[in-house]
Image 1: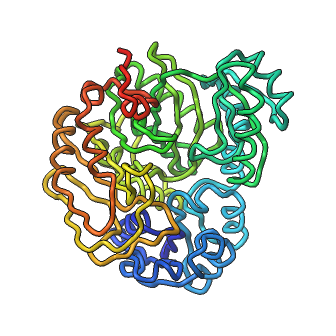
Image 2: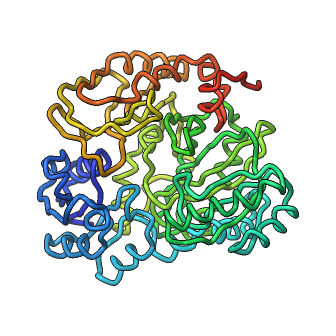
Image 3: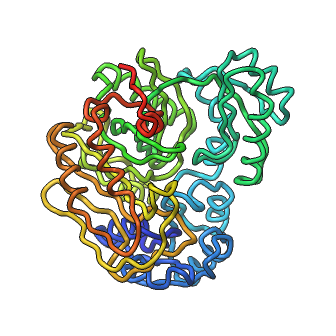
Length: 452
């Protein structure tokens, strides 16, 4: 069993991992930048090591400094959390070379699934439904235009490497293609240092539905049901829930089997997420696989009763899953809202600063994952998410009411947050009826009518 884990992350996910390790008797090491000296994760871990100044390249993205901290502390494993180096195959490979257990899949698997084009080809070969698209990497607009014509408009132009909505543009017509291609490619090169693109048919008005999987080193793979992540802004998720109200038991089983098939085809080990686009006609397509724990993992934990972080650690230790697919039961309904330090009235501009007062709700069926506290100064250098509010109830209607109530109780003073904006979403008539897709926020802000 792993004895000591270094958490190569910060904020609420670092706190979440520390708590899981503490509950199973594993020591923890926090790393932090100079800007995070007073952060909660540094106070909760058994030890804390400063790895550099605020700049990401000199702290949380510095592989050498994190590996050095691991060796100095005597930790035998690294948990990368999400973001930062969590899906960096070179970092996973470095851990392997240094005989440090990387709590996640192997470096080769991360590399092939991190390339969207290669991942798509793997899934197509395994019989997992994929969106019609290019099979070879695209480097120039002329070649891309030929491919787009063959695929059929509208098309989505995407960076082959990376994520988070960067390096993506939609072209509805051939006339729009070249400009959109060049814009997406430039953005991809700036964000990921790589200008490789791929093109696929653009699916209009889909839901974004993802399946959580767990796979051990003995070849056992299970899925833990789905999460509906359709409520998103600029491809960034805002609200997630499980189960998806648009999916029947029959479709759930079909998509779940496809998710398991996808994980097996990739030779996957540890926790991962298979992301699908779901059309109104119930046709679904593989979009990508995330090779890490997800921000929204708590909703799955609540409806299944399975602690995903603890399972990650057990799997990385070489232990087999303690359950099979027939043992997984989905109970009730869970919703998560991401609470961000930002100002929706000013284009969602980040709102760093000192929290002068904070009150977070509690009670039965309410969970808060956060690293915020009164007096904590949110630095301007990192992601603006400061908390996740998660609720559970017997059904979706009750879960929505519980979330509405919980959002109404939150007090965070000294900074701007998106709490009121989240409350507005939770009271929108189309959200209440489950009539949402990935363009929900865009249509809500425009006051547009929603298709039934």
